[in-house]
Length: 103
Image (cartoon, rainbow, N blue to C red; front, side, top):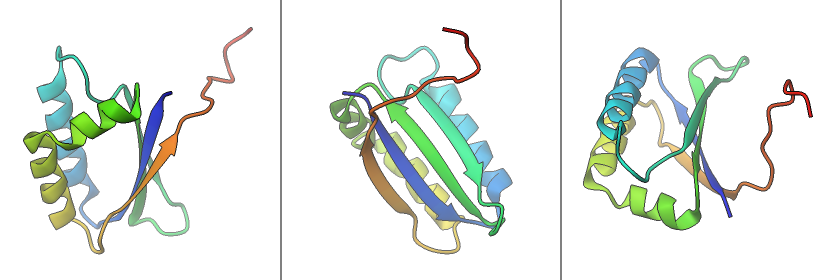
């Protein structure tokens, strides 16, 4: 079963968070495993609150990813840019589709 993690954070330094996310994406380029997709959302009623949805092929792949020391280091660096502790929610991904595509 596919897996998604929702990361809820608040920061006034999103440009720096985005730079760290891009750095990690570049590190992962060409590697097997790790996240298969990511969406970053900004809360319209609280512009310093962001939600990230990170997708994985399986919960096991997400666990392997979270045990990677580089991921732990990046999470710490992002946490240092946040104004409150980050909240993580683990989810089974039951359905995902692009509604603009024709059947």
